[in-house]
Image 1 (cartoon, rainbow, N blue to C red):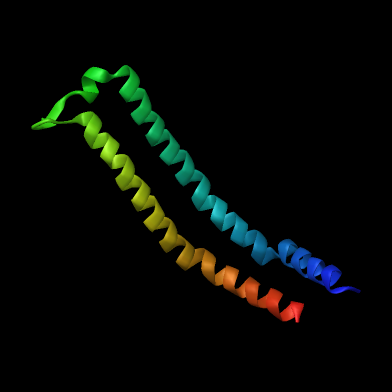
Image 2 (image 1 turned 180 degrees about the horizontal axis):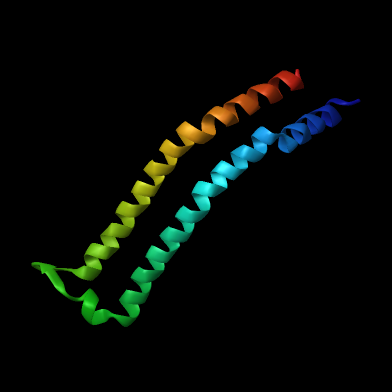
Length: 109
């Protein structure tokens, strides 16, 4: 058996393991809903910008209007999602991924 064949079988074994499937499931369980939520939030902003101009033009404070506030909140929400994902990954994904990586490294020797 060549090294390349050996490595492929190790990766296939890990990919078929329950731990790897759990890792994928945890990743998807968090990522897909957050992606849908963020895209819906962004689409709402775009729709309001295009079809609710009077609402978006309402002055909140001085020359700052609702459109500007919602636009800035897009950036805030992006950073919050990135921060929340890093916490989720650190707590739920990284321990499993580290364990799987160590197993692959051991089997590949």
